[in-house]
Length: 491
Image 1 (cartoon, rainbow, N blue to C red):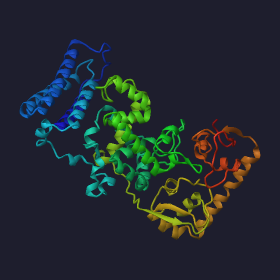
Image 2: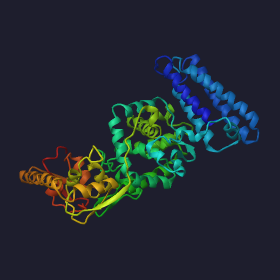
Image 3: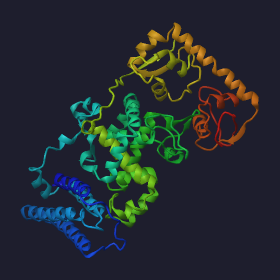
Image 4: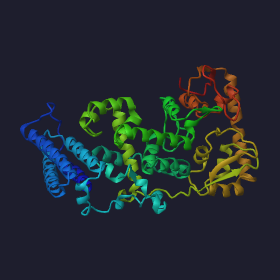
């Protein structure tokens, strides 16, 4: 039965798209007489469906099946009529279908068992065509599930999600492809944490794509940091602190673990409603809980909740869901993700070098975009210009280990990388000699990287040099006064 409800949701979407141009909703809530009649049919159909489930629970499966079928038939007819009726809000019907879908997936009862024989195999929607998911063993197919339900059933392809799909496939396509590539190399660090929590990998990718694009050192203007963008207080609540001067929000493994714990906690709070949980992750759990408490029977897309959200959250949730959907079903959208072998390995430096120098000598072999982002992501405690002593161990993809031996142990590319790196030193000296600096007082949760990003320094090297911060951790103390060099452009 739940598959049929999902079909009706899609049918409503198509009807709305094929109908007349949208009109401003009637502000009275009741609308004109035809609209009021459609809303009354909606309420009656939902009531009949819920009554049928109750009847089925008492052992009357046959009559319950007939009653629920009639209710869905009437709901479908009313929804199609709404799509072509001036002043009728199709969002009300989306919300109703969403509610019935969740109801049918909550506790299995006889009505769902009776309908199951007519339903298509749920595993057909498990997303095995995704290059990442296809690589998983048979036992790993639960990546498409959320609390025992197919993720494909949970993600409603309504208009906001369709708009987000278009954005990912057009102006944000480069961001999506880069996020996928970054995730391919981070996957062995992040996915196991979601797997332990029984959460879908597609949701992890969706959040990562929207939050940071898979850039481990991303810092927002508000101070949210890391690949999954934790605020300092929320990160600390889930075990992400400052250890030896390193902000653990930048650690991909610990960040994924904290994110999984957060989602698992909030799924309990919001009765496994993924959209409400994602809304809480972006807009604050307190605000979302207050909305959900005021409207306990409303889903995320219901106008009672959706209209009260900030524009950012109304954009955020469908963008995450759309990225997750594309992760599962790229072939449906003429989308081919880049194939990347993320098998992990490591190298031990045979000579002192920075990540910048390694990036130059590694070149573009096996990766046209170069290896800078991957090296930074897998070794987040090191700054790119920081010289690492011989004997330092770095985590790298297996293919990079082979290239290192060929191109970075010695030779002309090593000399070139060293020459380019040395050229940066006079720039630092010039910055120090100008004396045109500003003061900044270190706050809780600050790191060298986050301060450099906030002040648009273009990197941490100048900030480290002018304040004589000590490698490798560049430890900071709350209340410490730092000089912000003149090359940084923002207060």
